Image 1: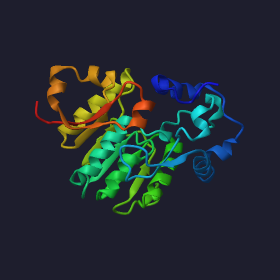
Image 2: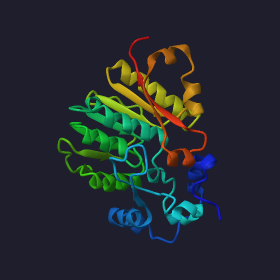
Image 3: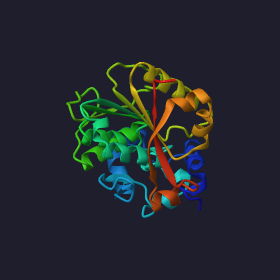
Image 4: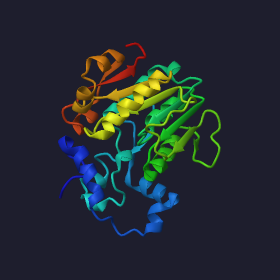
Length: 267
């Protein structure tokens, strides 16, 4: 039986889920937030076994049946929200270690997944933290994880009160908004195509306009290659580096550390 997770092929396996039939849940059941939340609660485990044990997160772990399941057994395609990626772990660790990065600011976490970085920003005193992921299932996962950590989760059209974690499923890559003080990109450079290039161009535009852009990356080849030019390398400042915990290393073969980079306006 093919494993949902196989360390060296994790991203490829998750991408392949979209081409498989889903298990026999009705369309209505799959798209009702209450049913999605119930399914997530029943098929994940609350874990602190990661780089940020201050956070309790619902994840697919080795104790979950989905860890060993076939791709077609998962009713939702591309469940990136079910895993705490190494780039996201180091970025979230950095936010918790440096609360001034978020305090009193509006923080946008793009490709939020399980929502850890946005939740950490809220816990660190962000006026507004926005967990942005285009997957509506991820939105439900973020809401569950926010509540686990005592953070108010708000989904439009409900207003987001100060100190809450607003959940947004719109595609925000490429947009510019003066309200964003900090933009977080945790493990977003897994694609060597146009998407990775678009992310870098966007980060460059944001930085030029005064938005702080932080990248969490475990050393993915795509990020190294995309930032290898002299100009880009000069604009990236490594602000932190962390050893990845044992479980994270096992799940992400080849990665042992992760770094947090900040884009600089100085060329």
